[in-house]
Length: 362
Ligand code: NAP
Ligand code: FE
Image: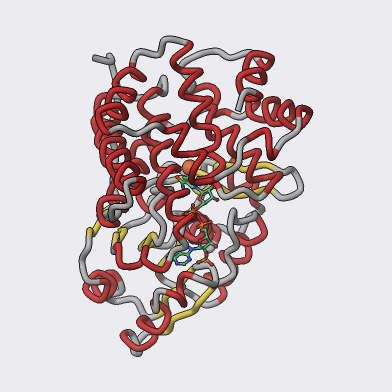
């Protein structure tokens, strides 16, 4: 066993509890609440109407301007919106984009500073209390302290993370996943899988996170196999697995795979989960080539379930890396990824030429 490690998971997670019950309790004593979201999910799920009719005694301010892969500008604007409306609490509703943006805005609301200044600052006021309600099943942002924010000018994804910027509470209500487009739903499932897999093999893994990661991979592999066999996906299971995986990366961070995926999103607007899925088969192979022992267990789980990840990725997304990137862009992707801090958690050292050759095979 590792000589020293920790486990810290402070978010109270309500699973499949009636939203009215959870939100009423969360808003006890709160007069003014900010709701941070994108434009689609809050309408399609009926959540906006539900809030307006159920909480007529509260002042509810809707900030629905969060775009996919939220930018620095958006979270600064969100922070100002919450501050100007004197919000005492925040509900983040949506996928990882809305939750990451809402969590970051909740801290900017209390700290009127430029982005990079607040990112670097060790002294800051605590964020407004957040209730996070995920409507995708991929990021696990509802249970960790990360906000992945895009610096548009630099084509870069920055992890705006503060040690205490966890949501106060989270609600997993899988009914909200039903309005999600199937391809995005599956892309987010792959994101959760990569969180578990990367967390499992990361140099920063520990026995707590390994236990969770194995559980996540078992749930997801079983569901992906069912999906291929034309059977029904279990949305509650996938929501749960995604949150567990969010706790895993909250401890371990992600690795080279995520760093490579960021490039595809930053430069080609490929959804984060799809980007990771497209890298996954190559990354699995790299781990095998470097004899990373833990991969044997993952391979066994996949084999027992009869899932071929490479085939699965091909048939779902119907595109390969080399369809998207020419050789010089592949090179740019590798150079970008090898500079990201995620690489430090990767359990093998990889040279750019070798990585490039392996990626070019797909
Ligand atoms: P997303 O970008 O939040 O959402 C993808 C799309 O699906 C959006 O257009 C969104 O629209 C829509 N959508 C979401 N839920 C819906 C629903 N129930 N019904 C209909 N449409 C729905 O996707 P995501 O994969 O969840 O989040 C990706 C972001 O999270 C990236 O920025 C990534 O870097 C970040 N991330 C964070 C962590 C972390 O640990 N914090 C981990 C991994 C990734 P609306 O937004 O308009 O509703
Ligand atoms: Fe991710």
